[in-house]
Image (cartoon, rainbow, N blue to C red; front, side, top):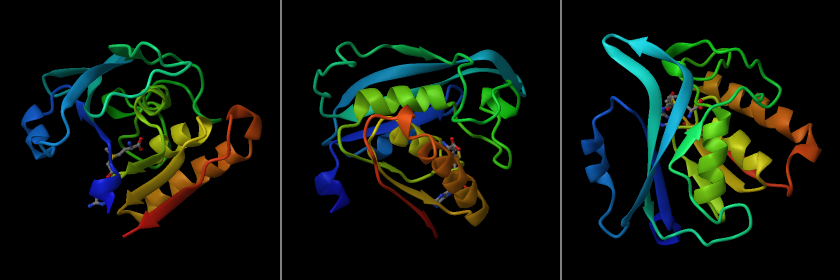
Length: 181
Ligand SMILES: C[S@@+](CC[C@H](N)C(=O)[O-])C[C@H]1O[C@@H](n2cnc3c(N)ncnc32)[C@H](O)[C@@H]1O
């Protein structure tokens, strides 16, 4: 069912990750483009300078609509706030400072991916602290997420609740379901 309803995949990898992971993408999803998700400032992991993640998009070309006429090649994180959470740069890998999760992604990055590549329902199978869900909520998209850790599910649910408590921040109401396995 999921396969027949899916029209696009976006895979986010650290810039030092092996892109051969991408061979798992079904052949029916043609390569679309990449986004450079830059961190400011970068951090280190061994000998690697972690300055960015790379998002690889596959599937159908998104419709050109108001607010997404031209798909950018880079999204630079700027310190504009994170759904009411702390905004100081800290944590590992240049990721956002979300208490209780080791590798949360930047909300600004996930917002850009949601804006440019989603039309209907978004599925994040590795929800973590719920950054994709928060971005989906803020942009009025429907959302489904899976997270194996009940503690991380709780963090995600709390972040989603924070966005819901600020209804003026998003255009339309979206639904979400956070599942723990
Ligand atoms: C890199 S983190 C995701 C971070 C997330 N984008 C955020 O901003 O917080 C990957 C997450 O996948 C979860 N995970 C790992 N294996 C899983 C599985 N089989 N099913 C569901 N979640 C899984 C981990 O617990 C972890 O929270």
